[in-house]
Amino acid sequence: MGTGGKKRFGTQELDLRTALFLAGVCGQTYVQFNNKNGLFLVPDGYRLIGDFTAKGVDNSEERFGFLLESERASVLAFRGSGSAVDWVADFIAQQTAYRPVKNAGLTHKGFTDIYMSSRDQILALVAQHPADKPLFVTGHSLGGALATLCAVDLAVNSACREPIVYTFGAPRVGDPTFVQKYNATVGSHWRFQNEFDIVPHLPTLVYESPKTKKTYYYMHVKGEVRRRFRMGSISGNHILTSYFADLAQEEPAFASAICAGPPGWCPE
Image 1 (cartoon, rainbow, N blue to C red):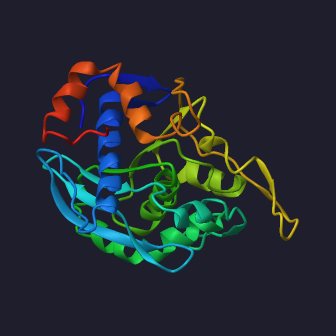
Image 2 (cartoon, rainbow, N blue to C red):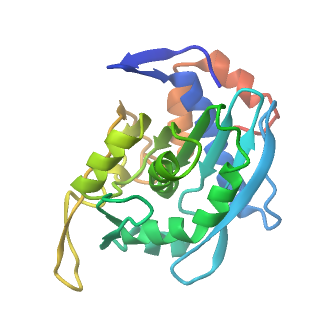
Image 3 (cartoon, rainbow, N blue to C red):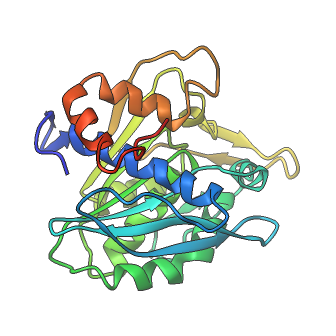
């Protein structure tokens, strides 16, 4: 993880170098998904502990991320939307009870169904992680939503009580009760949000199901880190490469260093 580029927000400290590195890790979740054999590049100094799959709304099994470990820390990374099936799940914005954590309110059904289909695999992987070593949980877009659902689960139901969360372009995940529970349970969460990215504004604060006409309420969890960049299109304002490039402008030397190990590792 990075050791520079730190900014203090209240009692918590944000490290832009760590954010840049984790954005690079998130990029490899897409590489893993797009390669039929699931291969991807592991950054220098890290090894793969294992990967995991999840089920989309059509019940198909897809690769959704992995756990990496170094001498100093581990990283659990979740993939964002990589298929039409994922986008369908993104917009199933009805809510369901978040059962892994008691009194945790309601969460987005599409996101929650995906996470719950992978939960056993993830808990088994994290059980291999030394509890005294920092565990970073990260994801972009849909992956940021899954990272959020996972972090509060780990904080309550695993030996890793203090996950450190960095998300990029993540949508809203749950209702006010969930957000209150999450904010009180997960100590460190940094939510990078481009002002011109539409995804963090979804689901809307007040969402009415077009089928049932039932009303649901959504809020963001804590830790907003506001960014501001325009890339000429709706997708350009959201894609991971744009977040990576934005952060790289603040830490160009560090970006060059991590992109060299191994070559081709950084998002393009």
